[in-house]
Figure 1 (tube, rainbow, N blue to C red):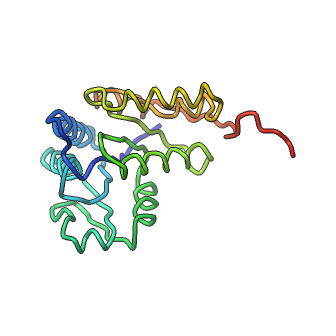
Figure 2 (cartoon, one colour):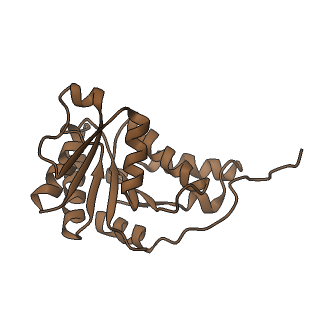
Length: 195
């Protein structure tokens, strides 16, 4: 798969550990050095601002998508290659997905998880065939990975849908995995019973 742009989901806060900020800087720099456009939520705060600043500092293109309400709260990044202001969160997610060839989640909170799971669900349902991954800094996503494996064991998620989510603590390795990923076409349902 040829990657031209990568959407990054991440926290609007910096988090408790400085390694999260370092990871955001490394990811932003790696994307720019590979000539990949960063697509993200358009904020200037937290890890969002950090990943954007790092990509810009390395000469990369950065496109932010932000809802009008958050732009009005003055948290939009003023120095991006392009900042698009949209009507709301649904429009934001749809536009980020439209502009991106792959998705990466850095550490973050509820919004990061919600964005990741929505775009993953879209892939599961066949609405897109784009890879996604976790940049698993400081074992941040270990417990989530364990719970996802539990969903497979309990037959609520199929193995190949679980495998859609790549995971690495190294940004270069994760980008390589996303570029090499091949979609599997299979139905979503596990043990579907006829009515």
